[in-house]
Length: 293
Image (cartoon, rainbow, N blue to C red):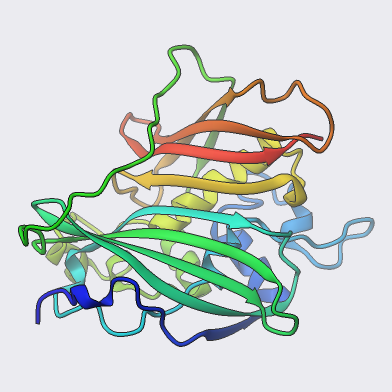
């Protein structure tokens, strides 16, 4: 069947997901924590280092808030589906271990001509208290499913500043990065199986978009938040090109709205892009909201 447009506005049954300290540690290593120097980022990669308390990388929020929509989106080749956009808002820092109950709502299906863009919002609450923890929004692009005459949809204005970046962070990835990251739950064969990747038009398996997103979130956390997850409020970006495991990422960050110069506790905004070291931008239209020291 084609895409199920009647899904728009429907909320699926809430899904409960629990995680442990080990899950948070595995995720951190999967998005490169400690890769350059195993003695750095120990608060995210270990639970028993003297003088340190384990913390959770903010982008782990996207994983724990995943849930299924009310019904299947439709019948299409999953090799033609790619992650197009991702944003999330943290209502409070993530605990090292816990459980959430997440409800997923399809908020729009848009006709992009060559394909369809599906927007989904997931709201995750603490399973024990019902308090909001994460609101995540994503966009999925399905090639070949456009042309149905629907609205194209819009986007928030974003313009790269006409000046050098205020921060630039270089992050290598490992050739086996996707094999490690998939252990956090995303077993899509696009990231491991060369035959499946070829069906999607790729020369070899690509890195998970959310792995690239996690690398980028680490760069933002350390460059602007003093490595303190409590200062990391929200993050948004659009995936524009694939990354192959082993490529090096360069994250360029521009402070906006006078960020870095106001009083403690105030909220600031930064723009960012992530690119491979040899040129193409892979995450565009990036926006971070963070709290001053």
